[in-house]
Amino acid sequence: MNTFDIKFVEVGSDFNHSHLSGFIKVYKEAFSQPPYNETYSDEEVNTDVWTPHLKDGCIILALENEQVVGLGCTISMDKWEHDPEFQAFIEVNRSKLPNDDLSKICWMSEVAVLPTHWRRGIGTKLAETRIAWGKKNNFTHFMLRTAKKGSNSIKMWQNLSGKVIEGLIQDVSTHAKEVNSQSTERVYISGIIK
Image (cartoon, rainbow, N blue to C red; front, side):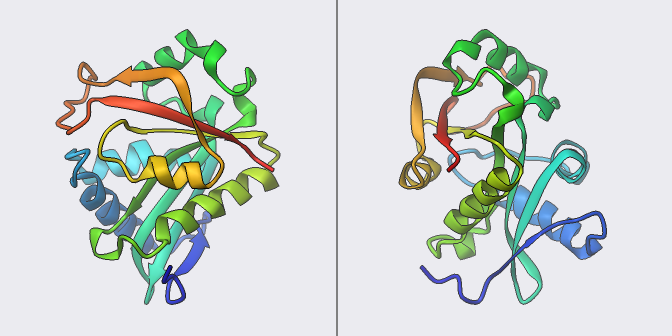
């Protein structure tokens, strides 16, 4: 792991505006890569990701020489409302969730690292930092979803005590936003925050 030259900061309301543009750049570049191959406008990233997390959750940035090279977003699962299809899927599968009280689940909604910085432990550090944020804010569990195939996240979260929730697989091929992914199935992972 080589994260000694990377600084991890939580974004507050007094954020540096270059961090927003860096966040958008990293988000778009990371999610345009396999297995997701997704495209987003700057406005979509700002409106659907940055703004709700800044208001009701947590944004952690990985900075190298004050440039954003990675990001992680977390929000209470009961506040993650931007995606009605996701909310409907969760409601139908509520009995499979690690806690019936969605306000106790720390939803690890996003993690992205520039491809030039992969395999340096940045994603793991972003995950650990967000778990610590969850603990500080009295969450009992963390949860996330990721591509069933081609994702490095599954192994990383399993190394952080996460477990794939058996039988909880979401087909996103009919998602309202066009999905051009190598894997149109998403698995869900959860773990206890200790």
